[in-house]
Image (cartoon, rainbow, N blue to C red):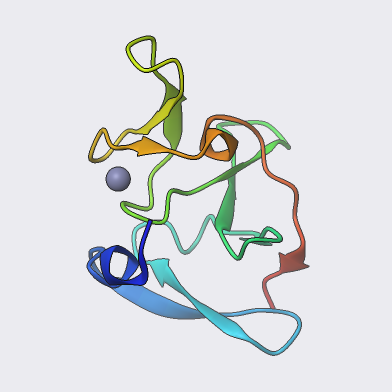
Length: 96
Ligand SMILES: [Zn+2]
């Protein structure tokens, strides 16, 4: 969840936002990213739906519910992460 871990993510590219800022987005997902939520987390559509899900800051993947810790874990590193990553996101700023 730290900036250091965010920077350690695999290949990333700059993605321009509609408000003039830019964020780093993983190259593998950049085509799917529709924008960011209020926390600056990237949002991508849930498979085949209009729903948006936030990508985890650590691994840029989705979260999933965990029965072991009754919270949400990252699908990439299995670290416990904020509950928001197990649910749907709300678009705050679309990509440019
Ligand atoms: Zn992770």
